[in-house]
Amino acid sequence: MSDKDWKYWAHVTKLDPDKKITEKDCEIIATSGTDALMLSGTLNVTKENMLQLFKQVKYYGLPIVIEPAGPEGVIFEGIDHLFIPSVLNSNDVRWIVGKHKEWLLQESVEWDKIIPEAYIVLNSDSSVAKVTKSTCDLTPAEVASYAEVADRYFKFPIVYIEYSGTFGSPAHVKAASESITNSILYYGGGIDSSEKAEIMAKYADTIVVGNAVYEKGAEVLKATVKAVL
Image (tube, rainbow, N blue to C red; front, side, top):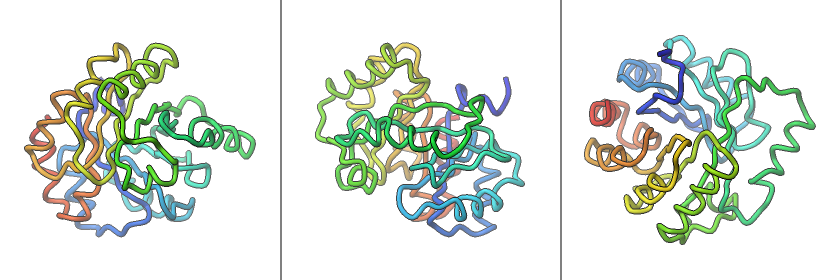
């Protein structure tokens, strides 16, 4: 099994191009046991700051995923995968398919690196919810329905439950998990301890840890990795 095979990752660390991270923290993250680095953000992401972050972390040998918020954050050279989100519960079609169309009008795409993601955004206070105009007050049954549509109808390889900055409802993640058959379930949001990592890892195939790195320091990452690996 290749370490670049995203289907088997249990822990991914998300780094934001709009935030600063030290070389020391990069080294701690790279040696924490996390399976991959995801370079992703919602606000103020440009090709320039995405490239800057990529250059900062590329030497550590971990698989690197770019998850762009829009065409302006896409880079191909040197990265392993692009995870491209479609926000299923957005009320603005641009975030389901429109941005994707604009992207393809602008440049050619290395399709062998593309992994589509079905995003379900559930924190109404988050930047991603506000930007994408997502309906976040969903019941577990509604989340499960979105997840099943993504899995069985649209055949998305990844269903991503995104609470972005806050720890979410295990019941919602459990409902999504029970509704999908083929998709890999990712969970991101508010994981800043081993206890929270363990809770969500019961239902999600892969947990994503991001804000904790900036708010509590890279050392906290080791506890979340140990909890799921």
